[in-house]
Length: 352
Image (cartoon, rainbow, N blue to C red; front, side):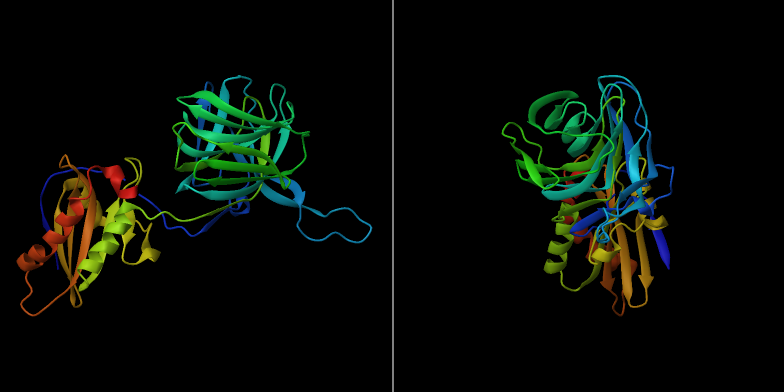
């Protein structure tokens, strides 16, 4: 049994489940194509970069044979291949799957070619294309540097001189804790930065180059503490207050171009699952749905922000009882949804 009750309209937000370690293994993607789950963009002038997964000779990680040099193997790596010779041109490939505050990142970079620049770096705490931090190596300038991008302009440079070559792989690590950032090449710490003025506390991570730099990036590992977003906190607090609830789920969409999905729920393993027709309709038309399933009743309500716009769908799962009706199921679930709604001023609050 499934019934629909009409209301208003709206739409917004989505997220994915994550562990304490994220491995970006480019061997999982198709060769000669951009990796899925990333967004290509650019800071400054010019077109976004040409990002693609390619094969390259990389240290295999296996011990070499006696009296022989290190073993190399063909591995899939990320490459930025465009050669746009514009000075104010910074291609970015942003990983869209997670947002990070404190993290430890380990990757490998190789500066391959470039007439004007030969750079490779990691951008982090990315708010958008015009606001983020980055750390990069320059084979042409023999520098390893930190920069902050504010409204598209570079600021706060911190640099260390180091001899760098093209077509050589370098291990790069970044340890970012609150406002203190440490970075190393091949195990040697070269940068220690403390951001004092208006620090950025959280953001996405991406790969960065400049001008006509052709650069490669190897497998990247990000170790971090998963953030608990407000939506998940609200689920946990609600279930604790109402222990007889059988389940609680919040669905929303990350932006207008994304499909709605589960952003919080009593089963964390389901986070990231796509919304079904019911949840989509609740968000799109501010409808209310009632349904029955075995010994449970399910009520799905629209969740409104302070302006009354629908920004999410909340599914309340309760145990049925003899004489259970649609009317009393709605009456049981409504106060629960209203308590959650009171904590949400705007759509973005749900994932803060």
